[in-house]
Amino acid sequence: MERSTRQRTAICDAIAAAGRPLSALEVLEAARVDVEGLGIATVYRNLKLLLEDGAITLVQLANDGPRYEMAGHAHHHHFQCTCCQRVFDVHQCPGDLAKLAPPGFSVESHEITLYGHCEDCQAPVSKSKSAPKSSTGKASKPAPCGHKHSLPRPSSKTI
Image (cartoon, rainbow, N blue to C red; front, side, top):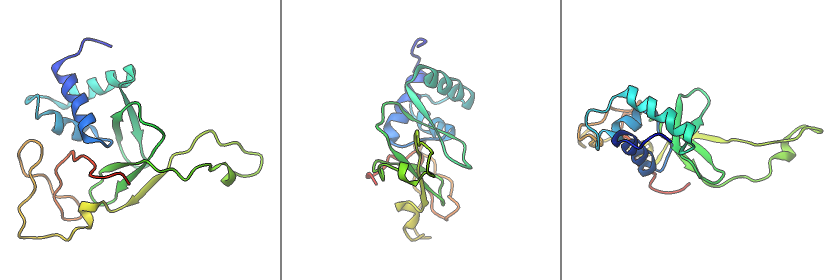
């Protein structure tokens, strides 16, 4: 690995603290807490290096951009909120899916993504509530569901 920089450390810390896969923009917002002037090009450059070094892994969901999580996770799946688009880890696995393959086929691996509404997006929208603050201290952007989410937000519980 190349020398560790303040930016790279902040990016790694942001991904580790989130406890869930983050998009590059979520990484940028979280890492800016530690490195104020951090730019998206620096985030992408460091994500590439961290991937090459095996420190993080790529999570690629259908119809979604790349997301990044810390390497070393045991086999797991993902849940994507169709409202705010955040992705969460799902640590349970249905087990041996080889029996679902057509006769004569062999299954090498599987990936399962569940889709639905996260805990925050299931909560009723309240017009009287003030917007939660993002990690930068600014009000976060409203999600398509009408809620405002601070990004990144560590998963509050394992599904």
